[in-house]
Each structure stands twice: as C-alpha cells, then as structure tokens.
Image (cartoon, rainbow, N blue to C red; front, side, top):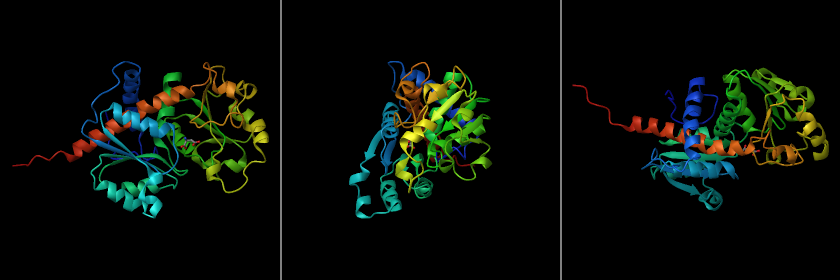
Length: 318
Ligand code: ASP
C-alpha cells in the first residue's frame, strides 16, 4: 500500500496511487459494513475530534460512525455553543484542542483554505470535511468508489457534472479526482454558474444540458448552493428546472445504463425529479451514503498508520 500523506486536505495533492490505495481499502471496509462484524480496532486508543463550523447531516454522521466502528474515542464539538461564538479565532480554538492531544481532527469550515491553515498549527492528522467552495475530498472519494463499484472501472468514463459548479466544493474535488483517473469530464450548467476559467481545467463545458448529457456513463447532479450566492444567478427555480433539472426526458440522452448521483442534500423538483432520485435502477444516491462510511474508515485508518509510524521512537545507530 502506498499512501504517504500526513493529512487529507484535498484531492489536488493526491497521486493516482494514493487514490487507488484509499479506494481499495474502502472496498474491504464496505464489505465488512454489510456483515455482522462491522467493528475493528484500527483506531483503538486514538482520539478523533469532529469540528463542524457549517451544517452537515451525512458527512458528520458518517465520520462519527466511521471513527466509532474503528474503535476511536470520538468527540463532536458543538461549534454552535463553543467559544467561537464569543469571538475566539479558528486558530485559537484549534490550538486549545491540540493541547488535549487529539490524533485526528475532522474539520468543516465555510471559508476556503481554513482547514489547510489549521493543519499547519496542530500536530495531529487533519481531514477536510469541506472548506468553503474549495474541496470536499471524502465526498469525491466516496463518489469514485460508488462509480468504480457500479461501472467496474474508474477510467475512460464519460461523466457529466451538472448544476451549480461555481459554488461547489464537491465539483472541484471530483474534477481533480476524475481527471487524475483519466476520465472525460463535462461540466453542464448556465454560464452564470460555471466559474470563469473552467475551460482550462481539462474539462468540457456545456450550457445546453441535452448536449452535455449525451452518451454519459455517469450523471452527477448538484444542488443550487444559495448560502454561497450573493445575488441572483438564475432567473427562477421553475426556469432552472426546465433547462437544468434532471428529468426522464433529459436522462434518456445519456447511455441506457448511466447512473445518477447526487451528494445531498437534494432539492427535488429544483435540480432533480423525485422519481429519478428514487429509481433504484438508475440512482445510486443511497450507495453514495453507504460508501461514505467505508471511505472515511479507510482514510482515517491510513492516516492513523502514518501517524503511528511517525511517532515511533527511531532506533539509535551504534
Ligand atoms: N453536502 C455537500 C457539501 O457539503 C453538497 C451540498 O451541500 O450541496 O458540499
């Protein structure tokens, strides 16, 4: 196994082999998750602190379950009631927690780059659970595992990422990962929601969804992230659904066995038709959630191995 990372801050710094190592281990955990023997002791004796400065349902629950199944002592910091509300800076909060000797810090923050900054100040492994519109590495890894299990491979696939690309850390992490694994990546959305310069990212850009979906193996839908918008980016939700909402008619342009993905939370009737989201023959949205636990177990297990190796006293040469 080759995974020489101290933190998991994004997909950008990872190599193809780092990604494959995480996914291979996650595959083993995914099988274990489906059995009665869910627990192991890979993180026994280690302390994991989850610090979520932004709302989360899936990611926080999944990191907590992953840590507990691996035997860690898991603590969820209630950021809403912490001293952050009294004006303490992110760094001071991190230094305070660092003094309690955690081994793994899982951090979500509304500002891009905040998690990288924090990682420079602490001496434990840091996992980015989403920072602003920058990266959400475990989401891209769980998406990759879901795709690999559904399609039998993770290269040379035709993948459409659709919707609010501009405000999406999920899109950014997926673009890095799917590009590194040599897939054809297409971004589909209104020009107001496609970042300027996207055409230089090694992807194709489409504002006509019907064109963009043609021959796709994977259709990944994204939510309109209004919390990160400072103005009107779409004329109306009705108009948006008409042009960019995934319905049966548009999905028919993708390959007949194309899978439909969504990171959640989903807005039915805005970016996706509810019946497609629930169609077990096309939608892998529940598998994504399932793979989320396995991927987070794998990532924390690998980081903990590196942490333990780095802490081991070095032998004295005589
Ligand atoms: N849950 C994902 C995120 O945290 C996607 C979203 O919020 O729409 O970025």
